[in-house]
Length: 247
Image 1: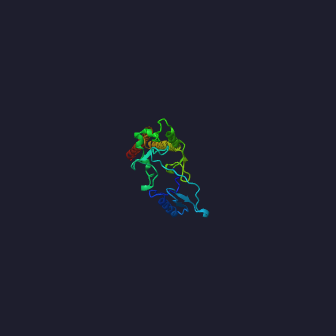
Image 2: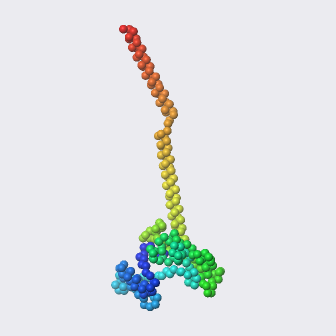
Image 3: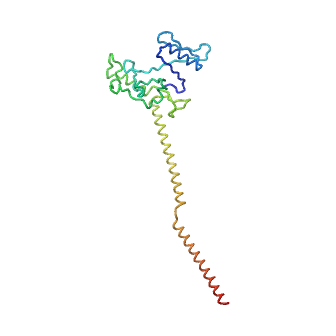
């Protein structure tokens, strides 16, 4: 997988190497990259820098060619295909908005392999690879466990300036670890929220519930106050009666 920070230029080879070189020169020129592509002969493409000017240098070239055949094309095979594009092998094509976009929802196992799992072993048809040959299975295992890739940081692993680089199994382990950490963090936050909610409920209950003992004591105190006031009124009434009888 290329570095997600790379500049990607898509050109078509359907018109031959010469047309592809012309298209590449146009694309490089629009980006201000001083490299020149040419087609010296046949299917050969040559890319050179601007020499002594030194504004652009070619440090290295590498090629990754997607295998599209199940046999007679080396040890590799198109194990997964694009289920949304007529089950074509995944090549990273930039046509129609780019094959990479949404591929996770379309990826499927090559149906030809599902129908004939001997293809997981038989990488050659003439002479036919013996079924006991471990070449292709070991190649698949090596791709999954040893070959490093650079992964986009969109999933939360790595950053734009420092994308995660590692094996597929290593990346899967990092994803599982990340999701486990997020799940644990969510559980801790939920537990903390539960504590807050419980405390608030208890406070609300304390503020709104009726304390029978307190209310009863208040009632008795009020009753005693009424009794005392009634006695005062009675005494005052008796004093007025006494005064009226005297005069």
